[in-house]
Image 1: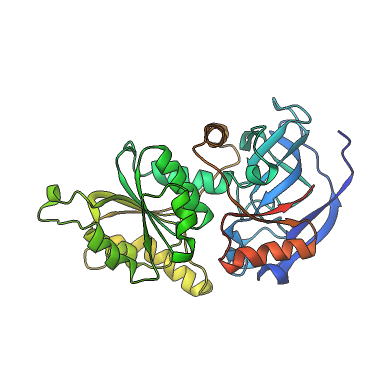
Image 2: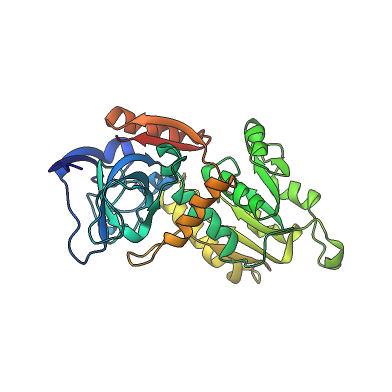
Length: 359
């Protein structure tokens, strides 16, 4: 494979919204250095996530700028470095979003990344679907397993924000493991969410979701053995309403776990900071806290941390029918296409992954 000396990549140059702070620049193509563990991937497709929400929130002095946005991709090995890959291997991978220490990202024609953060792409998986597998897949799988190690077969799991890419992935993985899945979404999204396997659907726009849950899945602390409908695990993919956790003793079993991999940043930096602090410290600080286990997390991956097992598992689920990636829209790798892709993600109306096809 002939590798050019120059390439185009998108970079964030300051704090702000994508339209204001992203540029497409021409830069040299970097090659793997000996002993670095790096490979060079010629990018075919990049899936967008909600990390754009942090662009106007994190001050520039806390970021390594200019930085390449986005974190998941699919492509072809252009230079395997010292890895076991070969030139031409088709792969999918994840670029860890370490904003303070790294300017690496996925939205470029060529990406230098760690070999332990990619796996071979299943032949039947399209470039677009492969590019969208890693972030929501890793987040959903970890949300289901990191803080609640019980086998999921027979557990009653609520996925809040079910129509999001993360929610859609969590539903499929939970169903593949034998769980009974309750999903919350708008009425407009219900049909698509039901097609993913959700056993029950609640329309959060009809009335406050905590009230609906307390009625449909009550937990009676005086008679816990007589609360068969209570939920065992809640995964809040949006993080917009703190009451979903603070009122959870009414519908989450005593040994249940509330996992929040999502956070709402729509109110700006101060409100986002308040939400994060509230999520982290509320359970133990005020009025004795809420008597349910709370875990807030995002996928954090160190440069030396291998993702090979987890990514191979996700790829395997796409092959055995457990998991399918839904694509909302595909856009071109130019300023107009990239901005249209961000507008679609920012609209909150995407049903599945928003993808930029690079080459």
